[in-house]
Amino acid sequence: MHPMTEYRIDDLARAAGTTTRNVRGYQDRGLIPPPVRRGRIAIYGDEHLTKLRVINDLLARGFTMTHIGDFFKRVQTGGDIAESLGLREVVSAPWSQTATATVSADELYERLNTSDPKLLDELRGFGLIEPVGTDVPPAQYEIKDVETIEAYQRLLKIGVPLPYLLGMQAQLDEDMSLAATTLVTAGRRAITEGRFDGWIPEEGAESDWASKFLAELRSTGRVAAHNTLYRALDRELARQLDDYLSIARSRRESRGAE
Image 1 (cartoon, helix red, strand yellow):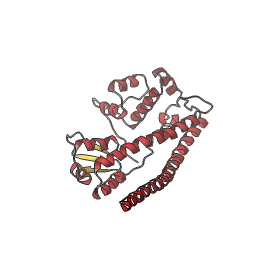
Image 2 (cartoon, rainbow, N blue to C red):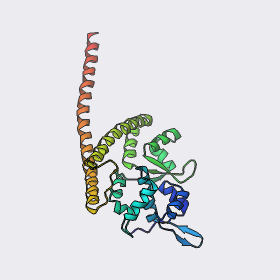
Image 3 (tube, rainbow, N blue to C red):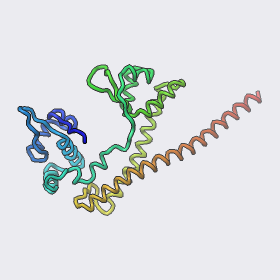
Image 4 (cartoon, rainbow, N blue to C red):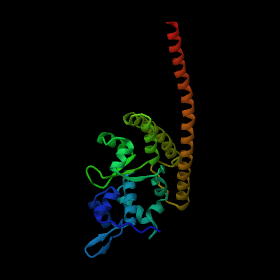
């Protein structure tokens, strides 16, 4: 069992993506419980963070504070709000399950054969690395996707320049964003079929169905997207290989005719 993370109000607000003023306001409305007091210090925990994130989710979907307050009143007393919604755990859990590692800045520079801030910012923008701490320049980085960075290293060792790889990654991000939009939009339409956009399940059976649907969508989407990409790679590789060899033959025939 993991120990509960403890937050002071500034840290809690930062982790939840909100402000200390909002935290106090939600507390005054009874949407989150009061903190534990240690002398003059207020200590918040994981329960507070979870509830703040649920509030953020509902606000982003267009609910007013009055609506959210009414909704919370319908939640069983003492029950976990995220669990009662039946959706948050499934929706918010990351699809990507990549291995991570924390390394010194010098080790990262050596792996990538560069310390160019512009290139490092691009890698960060793609979600592949993240500075650790507040040092400027950073003393450590978290590699968010070890497998991809190791693949980059192998290509760098055989002479492929990092700017070229980053250009490829930018195009992949754009293309994969389209694929993600297709999949998630299809799921959104399916879950609201016969209902309405913004529908949130409130009964046990509805909540169970929605959670099961989203879990299956995640599983099916991962498999379908993965295998569809592989089939597309096979087709495109064959097409471009034929094109490449055709050009090579043409060039050879041209040289022979000279």
